[in-house]
Length: 106
Image (cartoon, rainbow, N blue to C red; front, side, top):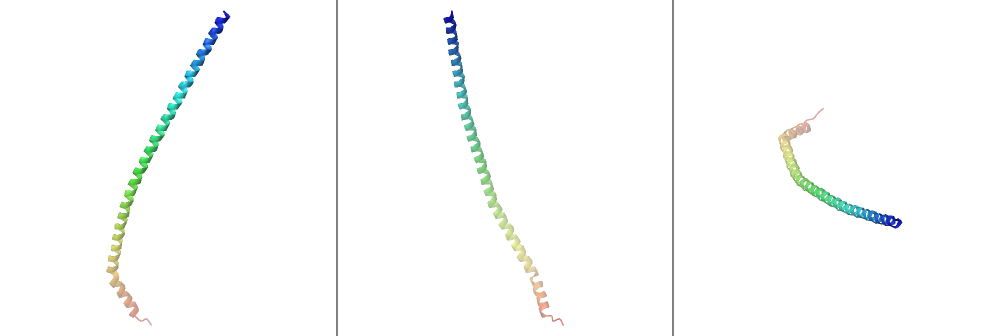
């Protein structure tokens, strides 16, 4: 009877060892799967972020060219406005200078 009890204990120990081994294998499989999923998510996020950055860069570069063109147009318009203003008042300025240069104060 003792040998039957010992046999049952050995069988139970082997069964427990198999259960532990199966659980360990399942855990390792799940960890490997989780690692692969995380690497995939990181890769997708990196790709998405890089694409967003490239879109912003392209949009900003395009805007930069448009801004430069707009600033050139505004500058040219301002220069033209100043030239017109100068030509409009240049006769008055010349007359004022001549009057002050030719007038003698005692």
